[in-house]
Image 1 (cartoon, rainbow, N blue to C red):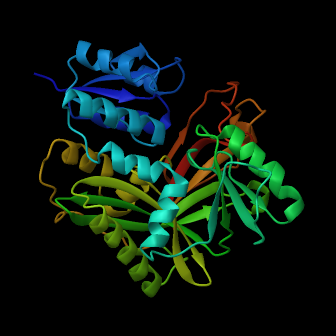
Image 2 (cartoon, rainbow, N blue to C red):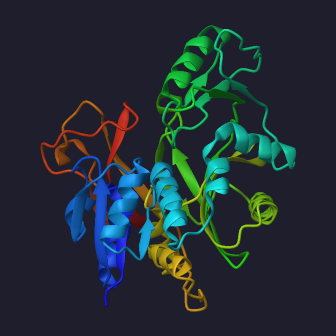
Length: 369
C-alpha cells in the first residue's frame, strides 16, 4: 500500500519535496489557501486549505489517512506541520517548543547570548517611542517574520523609529528587534542530526546583493571560500553546542551565519531544509540528496552516508531575479551557459508574486566552476 504524504504549501520549495516523494512511490497531497505555485499540479491531489488553520489541516490529514504531514522551505508551514503531527501522533522531528524558540528572533538571540554562542548586541522593542538605541548601523526586524521579510538596514538615528514602526506592523506579535550590524561575509549550513549525532554539516557561501537589496541572496556556493578552516571549526562548534543544549535527537536545520571582525555569528536557525534549493547544489556537488535524508529521518530509517561522493572544484547556485512589479519574461534575464541545472518558476507573461516587494526570485541555475 502506498504511503500518503500531506505537504503544507505549494511553492517551489514544496514542489521539490513533492517531486521526490512522487519518485519513490508515495501518494502526495498538497494544500494551500489558494491554487498558486508549482506544487498544486505536481501533487496527486490539491486541497484548498489554509495551512495556518490547524484544525482544517488536521481534519484533512485524518480524511486522507496521511502517514506524514510535512513541509520544507517555510517556517510557517513546518510549524503547522509539527503541531498537527504532535496532535495526531504522526512522525515529526523537533517539538513545537524548540520550533517556537527558533521562530522568535528575540528569544533565540537571548538563548545564544546567554550561552556565549557568538554574542550579538540586541534589543527587543514593542514601543517605537522608547527606543534607547545608539549603535549604528543596525538591523531592524520583526521578531517573528520569515526570512528577509521586514528586515531593514539602518545607518542613522533619524531613520530608526520609522523602521521599527514598520517592523512592529508586520510582526504577528507586534514586536521588533534591533541588532548590531554584522559587516562580514555571509554563509550558511544545512545540518542533519540523527540520534543526537550531526551527520551532515554542509557549509556554503551565501552570496548577497549590496545594501540596495539588503539581505537578499544572489546564490550559494560550495565548498565555501568566504570562511577559512578556523572559522568553519568555530561555526560547527556553535552548531554542536546548540544541538547538545537543546537535547536535539533528530532534526533538519538550516543555519544562517555571518562574520563580524572575522568571528562567526549565528543570525538565525530554521528547523527545516532551506528555501533556496541548496539541496540540489549539494546533490550535484556531493551526490547527496537531503530530501531523502529528511524522509529517512521522519521514518526513523538509519542514514548511511558512506557511498556519497565529493566532487572536486566549486559548484554555484545562482538565482534569476526580476523586479516585483514586472511580468515574467525570459528575455529580461541574463543568458547562462555550462549549466548542470536550470529552472524557472513562472511561464511567459505571468505576474510575479510579491515576496519581499523589491526583487523576486523567478528561477535558479546550478553550474560547476
